[in-house]
Structures are given as C-alpha cells and as structure tokens.
Image (cartoon, rainbow over all chains, first blue to last red; front, side, top):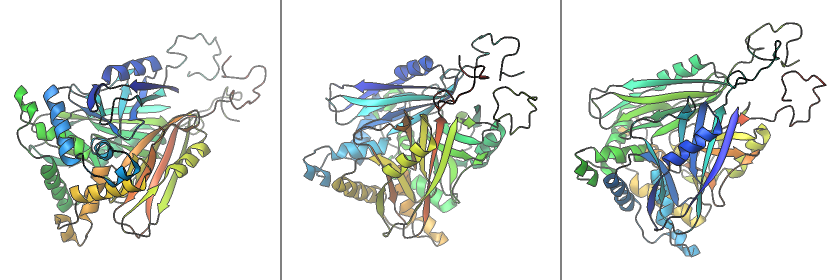
Length: 156
Length: 156
Length: 156
C-alpha cells in the first residue's frame, strides 16, 4: 500500500471565490505512486466547500448566485458568538464539504468535464484543503526489483 | 490489496430518470474479491447525480419535484455557451455527485432501506458512472494456496 | 492493510436531534491500528444525515431551521405508503448521507473546527451509523517484531 497527504493552503483575494484544484490534485496523485486507489479532497474548514463541476465561468457565477439564493447572508443565531459567516456554513453544507475521486492506472480517473473546485465563502485569510491519496502502490515486480532466484513472498 | 473498476454506461429513455444501481454495484463488489474496503459510485458527468435513498416510487417523485423546486429550469448564465442544462448542474450539486459504501465480509454493507440511485437530469445520451472497489483481498492462506513447508512471509 | 468496522446505535430522545460523533469516530480510528487511510462515517438509514460542521449550539439551530425551510414537513407522495417522514428523506439529501475523513499518523486528521455530526430527523427509535476504517496498518518493522536474521519478505 502507498499513501500521500498534502495540505494545500488557500489564500483567496476575495471573500467569495472559486478555485480550480484539479491540476494540483493530479500532481499529488502522480507523486503518490498510487496506481489503484482513491484521493480525498476535503476542506479543513466549515465555511468553504469542495465540489466537482464544469469549469465554465458562467456556470460558476450561476452556482454562486444559487448558493446565495438558498443559503443567503442574513441574521443567524450563530452570529451571537460574534461571527458573521452563518451563511458560509450553510453554503458548505449545500455544495458539499469534500469529494473522493478514483485513481486508476496511476492517474486521476475523471470524466471529460469533471473538475474539482474549492468554493470559498469566508475568505481573505489562509485556509487549508487536505488532499490524501491511499491505494495500491507499485509492487516490487513492477518496480523491477531483483529479488533473486528465490524471491521470498513474491508471486510465482 | 485488491481493486476493481467498472464503468456503467447509462442510456436513459427520458431527459430525467432515476435508475437503481444497487444490484450492479453489488455485482462489482462481489467480482472484485475485496473483503474489507470501500466502493465508490460516482457520476462521471456533472449533470447527473448519485445518491442513497429509499426505493419507493412516490418518494422518488418527491425527490424529483423537490430538486425542481430548489434548482428549477430557468435562464442561467451558463446558457450563453449554447447549453440549456444549467438546472441539471445545480441538481447534481443538490443531490450529490457520488457515494462511497462500505464493503464488509466481501459484500455491500448497507442498512435495510439503503439503495444507490443514479439521477439523470439531462439524459437521452450515453453517460458513465464509475464503480471502483478498493480494499483488502483474500490472503494466500484464505485462498488455500499451498505455499510449501517454508512458505516465505506468510503467517505462522 | 488493516480495517475495522463498528456500528454505532443511535437512540435519540427527540424526533430531531444533532449528535456529535467526533470522539466516537476517533476512538474507532485509534482502535483500528490504521496509520494512513480513510474512515467512512455513514448513516445506515435514509432519514438521518451525517455531516461535518462546527460544534456551536446557535449554528446547529441555524442548520435545523435552514433544513426545515428548504425541505419542510408537508404532504409528500411518499406518505401514501403510510409514512409521514418525507421531509426527513429530503433533509438527508440536503445535509448529506455520509462523510469520509482522513486518517494520518494513526489519528483523525481534522481542521481546528471540523466536527462530525449525526443529524436525526425521524428519531425516537434505534438507528445505526457505520464507522469503517481502512488503510495501512503498522508493518512488522514498525511493531518492532524480531523477524530473525533472514526475516523473509521484510524490507532490508
């Protein structure tokens, strides 16, 4: 088995912003050596979302407007603590906290339009996204390791 | 470790349709040889959903009506690209893009009412769902393999 | 590889209730011996949710009110079967059926505010949540096992 964990630090310029993470996730997958497994991409904060959708600017504006319509800024009980981001917590729940993507043949296994997005709803401060790959790494045989004429424990 | 990946091709007769995938997912799990692990069921498109719920026809109609109420057909910025399926993208986000199910003792480990559904919102053309099982396969001992009197590396 | 599966039985006093599962999930992770992997926390029923958010009482009331606004009690087709919990099925879809959390260095790998909640919407009867950990367990070397001068199959 092989595993690799990286923590992406997100520093958005705006309070709300969508960031396409797909190539960063792909790089972690390739660096992991995992051939068959899963990669988890998960916000480590509860005021930002991680979701899969299409990388089309108009659609991303539609998604932001839709999230605002269903989980609007407003007066929430949570604000009695001094916070002002109640809507961001609900947008996290609406759009999703995380995705898990298949890793096949050593690479991200996505459909033609699937892209992984980070959705920030309370930004302008550093936040983290965990990217964790777990799965089957290359066997000694695939790595070309010479285990000798009586290679112990290998397949025969 | 063991892994198995299958791609289900969905060809719905209608633009919107729910398809119960549970038995197909169960068949992939059993064919995988995985005894303890996870199976990911994920749409490879962003205009269809994968979710767990109850296989009751009235409830499925309720879910469709609810998705239409919260993410209605309408005029979206995405449509400036020539597309007309903005609502289907939002329904994917509302109902969910994927599920991950436990595999225990070589089988799907579901509660009594849990069923896995594909929710198509822009159908009448072929689409794919990835079903990927990853986990612990049978050991040489469990498979009854004779590893000889000095079986190297096996449990004693 | 290592795996551990536990089924938490939820018996809420109220029809609707949020229960913080974080410490129970952490205990399962630690008991599993998994060092690097994933833990799935998934409702085995489709009228309750599992989600990640902040453990703040006002926010939890906001989440309940929000779920009621978007997926209200009402008259659903599902009720023709004699059931009365159509809204609970929709709240499950809105808040999410499950989460998968990273396990790193043998422990839950969460951000500072991430907590795992069970959201009951049709309670006062026993229900189950599955907690399943799968990943890389300690190797013989890490366990300090003496495999002798010619330890078969171990790393050299």
